[in-house]
Image (cartoon, rainbow, N blue to C red; front, side, top):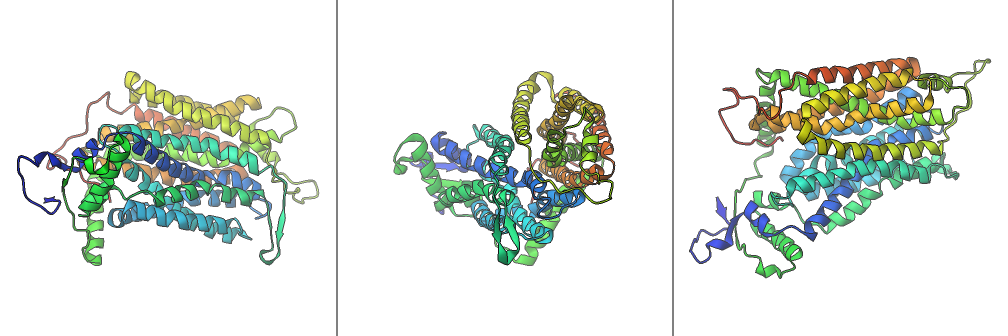
Length: 523
């Protein structure tokens, strides 16, 4: 234990000595925390907008880049693939080099690569720049929750993280709103040396990077996380941050902050590189292996499968949602099913030549997307109010059953307005993602809880990537199969949730998990 480099302990100055958590409580709660939450929320909004951007860009870019439905599926999966491949790396880098440094470095590069992607002349160049932009974007996705939580004291931490998370829902409203402003514009600027025409969809890519640009500017003036500074042995820097928080929150001079000496645990973050890599891999193995042994194995499989299904259905179909809505809005024929409209948009004329490529976006597509984004936000709030009185298990079973049946019904409905409503309800299964995380926390012992949540969320992102590609194939070959398959998956998830324990039965205990009560953070 290090006490700010000093060991004296007199009765007079004992009150000026505090642990980090005690020191955080003394900084109070106020303007500093709210401003930090808003900055973090802005970064989170940038993450969700970058992740879902392809769902609006690809329908508008299909003619310029000569995209098939399968190619659009692969491009839409790029952000999810980048998160899957790099989350562990960014988490490790943030633990060794600092949260603020990693986010500043990654967001600036992500914005530059996104701008370059907007000038891409062909699908390969566009895919490469989009992948690397998403790879650096994923750093903020992996680190921002930690950075937000470590600036808030224990009394208000959950609340502030929840408020910051609400910006994800706000992003699903802002994205179609910005698309509505930009995509209907009619301009085409020829850039001869790239052999491209700079059209509105290219501008949309740049516009959706603005939250990252603003977030980077604000982050430049923000300090490093006090928790990281403390754990790295940079005690004086940590105290400087705490004094600033105290001064802003309590409107008092910095030198009146009562904590003069900080008790903190110092971890040596400077082992040799080869040993560090071995330790990282060993830690990952030790935290993951017990999840695949009894008695935890059944719950690991259940939580991973349910999250896979939820992410696959919500994110997989959301990528194609603007395409589906746009096809319905542009359909002038008689009442017919969603898949019949999509099939008609891909037919060829009697001479066997392909119809003229049409990449126009109907404005009603954006309007409906905004409405559905607002419903998403409302659903998250409603579930939050009901969960304490009804219980997570009941909500999961009922909501997943209803949304799964609505997914199948959306394909069968001949009335287009009814089909859109059923399809929108089908997407509401995404509101169960947070509930499944809460269930995972209750099911697993403290020692393996964080890794269990991490593993289930990783499987969810695999589901997002797989579904966006699979749905693209189905829409081109057998449209109805996508609704039947994913509707059935959600119903199976509901049936699996019937096996969950009742309220607050606590984590599974066994000799395997009782040997230590120490919390082990995931890498």
